[in-house]
Length: 326
Image 1 (spheres, helix red, strand yellow):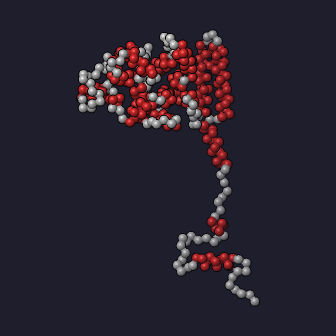
Image 2 (tube, rainbow, N blue to C red; image 1 turned 90 degrees about the vertical axis):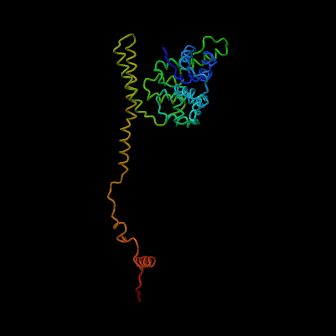
Image 3 (cartoon, rainbow, N blue to C red; image 1 turned 180 degrees about the horizontal axis):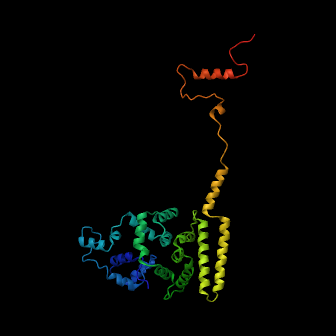
């Protein structure tokens, strides 16, 4: 059973903010924003935990009772938001940004990477705004993996009480295509480090720093384990399943031999550098200048450098010199 909602803090805010609204109305508000309110029963349970004081002045910071209530329930940022909280609320209202953030949070992606991905997609975000988003709207620490997969399935599930045929057709198509959603792939991935890459691909962002050899090594390892598992189980069709996994292992091994490991790739690059290195001895300075060089930085005083240079050039030329013949 799903015990809590990742958007529990925001649901508490809705309860306090819209005190006169019914539980079902609050559920519809949260679902319209793409969140997971669970149901009216959950809203009713939360309502008993957030009873504001009377009178209640949440925007008045001088009202001590209201201020203490907001701090105790961690709702202060909703009523007195800073620029980071305003950014988080804006990101919630942008479906593409919301999808990207939720997918990368499920993949355990560092916050700085999430901000970088949002920036590349044209969205403005900060580290603090992503922290606010996670805390307020998608706190995955409130649920385990099974509960998260259940919540995503409920989010995409078509309503069974829809009477409008057009709406029923839209919801049915929406549920049918949910299998390709990047958030579902991230929640179902057994290896979170690899789910970051696969989720990025589903979001339309091709990673440029993925380690192909490392992925192949992990695939070979997992296929060998699955083959062993099927062989040990020894159930119906398990022999075929074991053979299929062994085929995957053999294929991955063959591709790895052609691709090579990162260590082998580095070693080959170092060898190329070694082959391009000139191994002959460097000539001495005397050999290059034929002895016509000096270690002096400045010319001696009283010496005209241009005159001396012209005289040396004249002495070196054929027929040069000051002596006359005749």
